[in-house]
Image 1 (tube, rainbow, N blue to C red):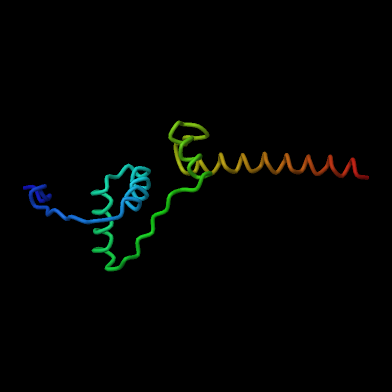
Image 2: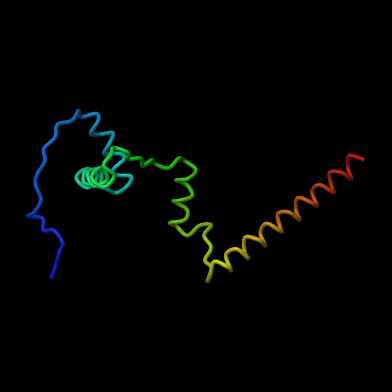
Length: 113
């Protein structure tokens, strides 16, 4: 027995907005790959669940967007079999960075004395 809603169970809502507002919000919706209808439904569901207008979704800044794009392309992405393996990899990288910092400090002290 299916409990999902059919499209026929939905109602149409007609709204009027300024053309410049429509263009601005569609740019954001496009970023999230949402149609205007999907975005409005998302907003309405959020209001119904939270019983408030507390709806805070922000577009990533330039640096975050670059990292997201790179990760989608497999750039600078590592794969680990377990969380333990991930932390071991991070610890190794930190040890290497610390060692490099120590060596750099020794070189700087040697040239300044």
